[in-house]
Length: 100
Image 1 (spheres, one colour):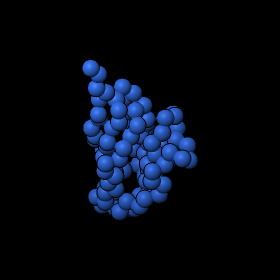
Image 2 (cartoon, helix red, strand yellow):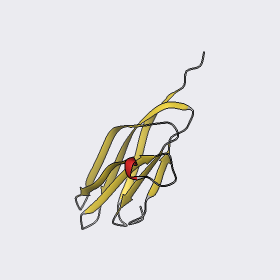
Image 3 (cartoon, helix red, strand yellow):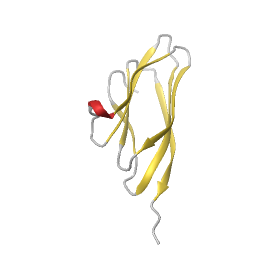
């Protein structure tokens, strides 16, 4: 992830009921890192879109994990960190629409 840049890491498809996701953010660096996470419909998050606005991630392999995060259809998932050496992983499941 680029430092001090709001990065869109995923967009949930619009043709689903919902998605539940896990975000793993790891700091392999020698200094603590700060992270922000937002979920919103726009190209950039609004103040109301933040689900985490300042978690500290310990140095040397520290993890910030957010699991079972419910994400509506068509939403974007954003992460912002303050260090260039922080990495993120995103995984999840989608509930498809059921049509007869």
